[in-house]
Amino acid sequence: MVTGGEQVSFKCRGCAGENVVPVVDLGAQPCADYFPTADTPGPDPRWPLELWLCRDCTLVQLGPVEPQLPEPPLAVESATSIAHAESSVKELLRDYPELTGGVVFEFASHHGGSWLEHLYAAGCRLAGDGERADLVVDVHGIAHEPSVGEMLRLRAERLAPGGLLVLEFHHLLPLFIGNQFDTIRHGHWSYLSLGAVKRLSALHGLAVESVRQVDMFGGSLMVMLRHADDAKPDASVDVLLEDEDAAGIAEEVQLASLQEAAWHAAGALHDELVRHKAAGRTVLGYGAPSKAPVLLDLSKIGTDLLEFTVDAAPGKHGRRIPGGCGVPIRPIDELRAARPDVVLVLTWDIADEVISQLEAGGGRGATYLVPLPEPHEVVG
Image (cartoon, rainbow, N blue to C red; front, side):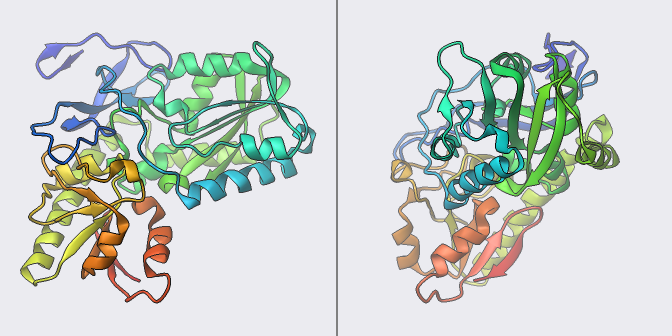
C-alpha cells in the first residue's frame, strides 16, 4: 500500500486485515487535544490526518499514524452531556427492567457522560475484579482506542451470559451526510457505522440486537448487543443498515467525496468571516473543542479574522488553538463584555445550549454563525 510516496504496512484496526485503502486526506494537522499556552512559540507539531477504509469489515479509521502528544483532558462536561446520561439510564431501565439492581461495568470515556451515578441510584453495583456484568456500558469510549477490534473483545469478555452491552459512538452516517469533517481528529481512531460494528462484533461472538439514534455530538448511535446465542435482533437494525447502504458509507468513491466537501465548507467559512470584517462587523468565537483546530486550520482562519474564542473550561484559559490559527482562548465573560456582532459557534453540536446560555437574562439577540455543514446564521 502506498501513501505519500512511501510503502506502508497497515492492518485494519478492527479485523486486522490488510485490505485497507486511504479515502480522505485532510493533510498534516496539529494534535486535537494539544492546547499550548498562548505564549508557546510555534510552529506546533503536526501529523497526517487521513481516513482509511477496510474493504473487508468496512471500518473507517485513522491511517498509519502513531498516538500523539499525551495531554490531560481540559474540557468541562456540557449540560447536554450530563442530561443525556441521566435520560439514557432512565430509558434503558424502562426498556430492560431486569437490569435494575444488576451488576454493571463501564468503560470510561474521555468525553465524560458516565452512567454509573444513575445506575447506582437504581440499585446496581459495580462488577468486581474479573466479575462479568449483566450490563456493560461504553459511551463514546471505544473511538479513543487505537485497536477497536481488541477493545470489542475485552467488552465481550466482560459481559455475563444473557447480559447486555451498550455501545454509544459518534455515527459515521451523520458525519458523512452533515459534512462534519472537523470531528475527524487525532485521538479518534475509528469512525463507526452500524455495518462495521455488526461485522466486527461477530468476530467476538456478539450480535447487534437493537439500535437507537441519539443527538449527541452531532449524531450518535446507541447500539445494544448480546452474545450471539442470546440476541434477538429487532427491525431497527435492518432499517439503519439500509440507510447506511443507501448513503454509500462503505464505498470508497462516496467516502472520498467528503474531502472535497470539507475543503468547500472550509473555504466558505473563511469567505464568510472576510465578508463580516469588510462590513466592519466584529466576530468572536465560542468554544475551544478538540474539533476546532482542524476546522480553523482548513479554513485558514487566524487572529486577523477571529481575535479570540472563549470556553467554559478554566484549564483552557490563557491557551490557544494549535496550528496555524493561534486563536487565544479566554473566559466566557470576555465575550459578553466585548459584545461582538457575530459569534462563531465552534461547539456547533451544542449550538442550542450555547445560544440559550449567552442569551439568558436579557440577551441582545446577537447573530450566531454555525460553521457546518455549510456556514449559516442563527439569530439569538
